Length: 265
Image 1 (cartoon, rainbow, N blue to C red):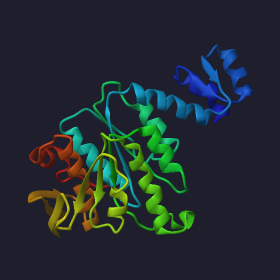
Image 2: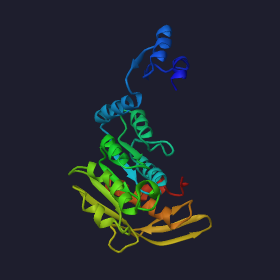
Image 3: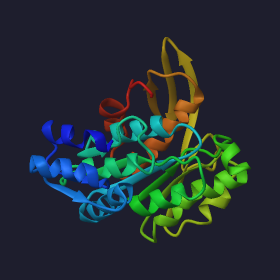
């Protein structure tokens, strides 16, 4: 990437953060502003951490073994029906993607929605510390990347690290049907809300059906229709509905202006 530092400046980058002295010499010749650091990835993280502390936005972090991107998109749409929202594009959920997402947020955004992914131990803890979420969503605990973690128990432990960054004023949204629900909820200092098919779910999904290209269901008896297939997308929407309700978006607004008939990722 350092080979293209001068090209980036010529293309309009106002300043560059670099770690290669050779690139610095080239930028000097162009009189381009730059910061020469020892580790540019570490600098990216530090910049994002500092900017996160300046933002007044409430942060919603989404993780899980599957459904992260779709749940993030549904959550973005639901919150956007009432608030100014910034979310990570696509599935930029890594130790590079998350800092870039934070730095791209407008200063006046009211909500920052960001998914957090991991394929090795420690990544969710690092991303949680960077995001400092006000709300944390776990979609499910499955076998994705089990080859890296060794077991589903280890995956649950890794995903659960996000909850440790909520603090006493935080709010967790967890899958009530998941076998790890009790284990996850026990680590939360703040509030816990649940979604799922279980009668014990705070946001209960029922009457799930697919016909005419639409997935229809109810959440606490509120009707929802999506341009999607699969009960898993109903679950993803249920998590987003829970976040919207917690954040003061009424059900009618969520359906008509939020994810009603939206396309999953």
